[in-house]
Amino acid sequence: MKIYIRYMVSRRCKMAVEQALMRMGLQYIRVDLGMAELREDITEEQKARLKRLLHETGLELIEDKKDRVVEQIKTTV
Image 1 (cartoon, helix red, strand yellow):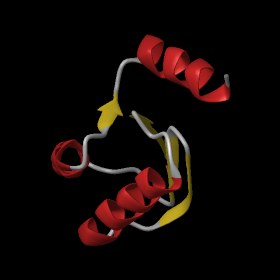
Image 2 (cartoon, helix red, strand yellow):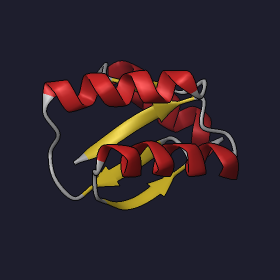
Image 3 (cartoon, rainbow, N blue to C red):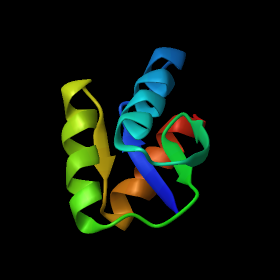
């Protein structure tokens, strides 16, 4: 499962996402700017908790498809 994250602009942001995923016990395949690929789907409860953890570090989970596309374009540019 891929999740998309807003405001990831540096290596430090990637580390913050990795730490949040580890705190939750979620296994990931990779974390890149703007996204993380998880080994398994996550529940709505896990998604809500991840959203809170990311928010604490100034990041935001992107759930809307249109917003995901916009964020991917920004990250690419």
